[in-house]
Image (tube, rainbow, N blue to C red; front, top):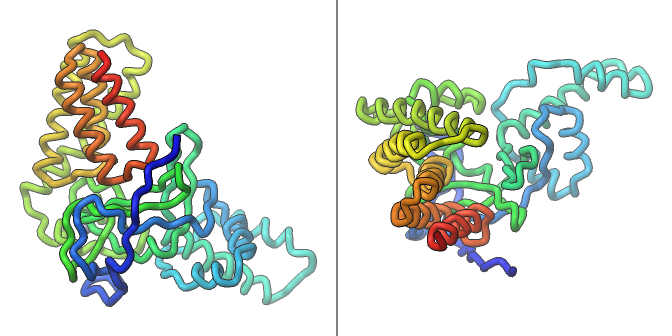
Length: 322
Ligand SMILES: [Zn+2]
């Protein structure tokens, strides 16, 4: 079946100095919620296995323009702690290159550092192992723990897409979340050390006690939900198991809506699970309600040409067919 076309309007943003984090991306027009702001193919993608040598060799194979785009990216991570690759590199050098070897190591480290700073995760709905890819335009977007856009690699079109999570006003900085944001500020800032900065987004700076508590609670409940989901695949759940598990999921949904976390990884996943549990309990009306909400989240965050949207549509259809 042909994929629906999701337009990516141009002229929606510009790059300029951000007050808190170097160059950032700023809206130059009013951007309605769900708009696809960016659709970008990877410059290259690698398996998620910390292979410094493969990273450098892949970059060397890129065209001149592509290499230029890569080397123009920012770099903020430290060299990999594991240095076995240096011995491997020395062994691979045909002759003794003396001081030149240190320069070579430095080049490999620089390449890997840029890669680590700018890579996005490519997830595959068929369960294939994740990859890490570089998307030079997407890499320009700064991080926020209260993001106004959502990024996701779309396997159907081999592109990373960025969608508006809400209406964005002209002049507003456009930020995506580099990390799982269902945690309190201290934990988020700890994870963000990978990128070498202290997050100064509105959520981190305000540290409102109510939001801190909510995010902390959410992190715990999400873990409970995901653990239960894993167990469900090999346990024989009865109606009461589903009812109990659904209570947790509904609590998660309420907390997320309160916090405005309306994206695929959090709310979308919770809606999907709520629909599945309701289906298992023969609560058709509820299953349809949750599946419809899931579909809307996937449409907004990933678009109608995504595998996530197709999966949500299939769930809704099966709920309606019961
Ligand atoms: Zn933050």
